[in-house]
Length: 551
Image (spheres, rainbow, N blue to C red):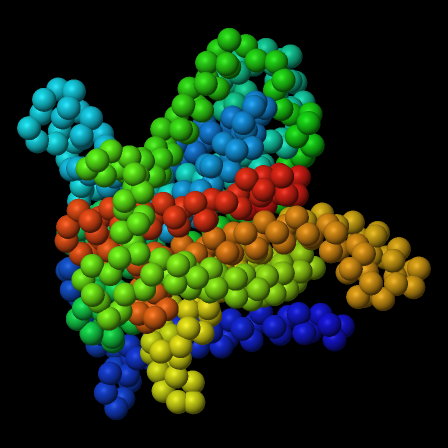
């Protein structure tokens, strides 16, 4: 009982100190602009047509982005759920890469493909002799929707395909025997069974689009600022911390409601359907129409991934053809800047921070997952939303909270690298929960009871029973946590100091400097980050527990 209390206290104390306390500090700063309680910042935000417009724009752009994400993700989810083909493991791993990539790199990929000097515009100008780029979607809503769908479709693929792969095929077979067409069977049987998983993935995609920062900041322009971007501008440019705090609290209210809905949908997935091993559900023999559909879907997936492929191609392109010029130029301090760091130092910063983040995320996330696995069904979904809250709170808001909460002795972390580790771990540990929880829930209670009857201590039971079952989930969760830390951008942009510059921040700063050379270096740094992040995902596909897990 003591061990369980320690497990319970650990995540709660960690969240209290580094999540709720900074958020309460934001609230206090918003309500106490003078010597007394003052709600003027909230009145100013809610009474200003500009900020109300930011709230409305954030909601409806997230809605449209979610619809586009579902249209992209569901066909691919079906292919991964029901079809086996050569290269599926690699392709499935590649489909996850956009979700983990930092938004700044995703934005770079779209600029490289669809920007005024992008590959597609260059190709069309060469083929048809256009004097001006024919595709002009930079700083438009179109490119924002495309980038959000590109960034979040992997959520739909992961959540829906994991559930779809294990649906009992006898239901569809029975419907076919009774004379139902395939379309009617899908609408009346398959779709209702999939509905909780679709809703769950849609809510999560909506939440990520709702809290989008890097995509909107780089691709959208000031006219399309979301609540996230407005919070950043109030903090970093206008220094109106009380207004930034009020806007952050309003955004937090929305995101917590979304996470409650998500947790409820996840709870429904766990109890509503008769699941069977995927060996009995996958399609081994395909009709000609299914083969064509499979080929078209794979081609669509490759097309979706084209921004990242083009990003690599452009990073290798120079005036003299293909070369490593942009990569070599990263090592040259052309401006003789005092704050210059070599790529090795920047990569070392990112890897070092990611490794420490992973350790903390594994401890906190595994403890929380164990508590969720042991909780009653009535309260599990509410507790799930509680522990998943950092996933729905924007990194910019968390960065603002840390600046306000830990800015004076004896806990002044503003100039320390430790503040980055704390921020990254809060964003990363929910991924550990989603990776470990399915395996924990699948451990038969008889195994633990049998071990206790045979005299095994709780420690030996954990080492010999739980740990072997949890190891694949722990590796998956650790890989996600490492990748999330490597690509974290919003909080790092507010908190990082020059000597602790990470790869996403370095990319953003290179983009902010004029000249083709800086743009080429940003492409090169983006390619390095993408290759580092993608390296672990091929292995993940062979380590997932029964293809389950929220991600």
